[in-house]
Image 1 (spheres, rainbow, N blue to C red):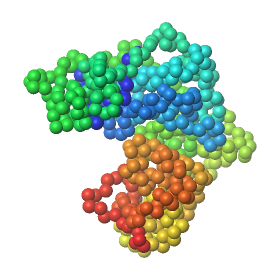
Image 2 (tube, one colour):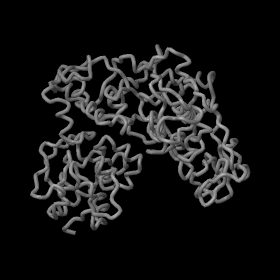
Image 3 (spheres, rainbow, N blue to C red):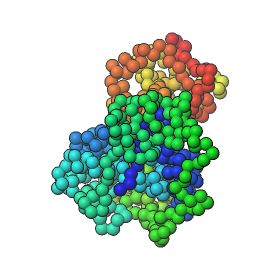
Image 4 (spheres, rainbow, N blue to C red):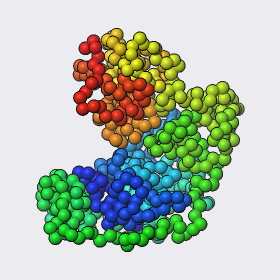
Length: 540
């Protein structure tokens, strides 16, 4: 079975410069529709346009530690972790889970690969998922007996996963199959096998492909993708043949002397268009075209988030928790009707409505008497964070100029030290700290819907920001509002927070915070000017 071991690209100084994305192989190195390589002119299933990619604009390929961590997981609950568990799930989330690490290459390739509804249109999807299956199959061979491979499955628990993932739930859209049928040994016994991942050594630096080389400069020898001409070849100092059809000069791959005036042979015929497989087996019906009785959103704000573009900005959350609004499935009900029961199994008691309240507010609005407030009213009082922090009154009006007044939609602290500073009586230090720490400084009224002791993300983009390494570059906001994604749950302990904050003598608040109508996304992602004009705490 062919597979894309994306770790081979991750070992380069810049994975985007891998020969894999050149026109001799997969093409699509430039943002937009794929017009080069083996799959140029590859149409979407609905035949409206060509497949799109945006390689390297966010996230990254898998890395060595992630793959080895999954392959060496001690228990099936580690490798098949519940990824969207709710409060009450008895199984701890495992970041080794294949579902978590497999999402990175989806976001890394970008374009159509980002969304569940469109990712399978790109042939890279199948090469990537074959590698995911290789990781899973390797773990099975290492950790399970032959009989256990076909029977062991994470327990069914409504607090841990949607019912569609239960062991004996139908494996849609595959007819009479159920989920546990995917554990069968027949797949690798009869239909396919995987070749071993490629390796090399100092004595045998051969990676068995002209598109790969043996990296001898970074610890133990290991195979890596070759780099295209013009790409970054920094760090390969032991004579490696790291450039495809070129050589490394001043840390840049340049053409070999005997290659001037020539161009690499393309694997596709110039001027022709490859016929997509989906057209060759016409007619093909997408599973999304069929209405599903299990197509529900998990939160009443899903439609609002979808309208604001979060299906593409934070697909890992949205396409699993907001399936109906993101088009991952087609519901039996009308998404535009405000006050109905979308589920046929809504509870008849108050206690039942209070259980899984987020789900009930979305799918049992009539039975549970949640129609007194529209979804728009419920979800736009704040920036619709997850879980929500609901503002019950706006920020107080200050007698200052418009340019110095904080304009945000939520009662949110913008620095992880806000709670600590408030205990040090620093909220009286001027308008800057009150604007940056409105919740801790009590200049707005907030109703926190979850316990302050819970380690959670409070914005739907947290995971996407974390994948873009903003936990390191935007610690102020991220460590406060994206603790789970940034692995900063220790800051919930007052002693840990105090230790982290005592060393910050003159904290700076970014100028974006002071712009009219600044959103959390603008605050976290916007670049600061070259000459900082940030504001310090005036009392320091």
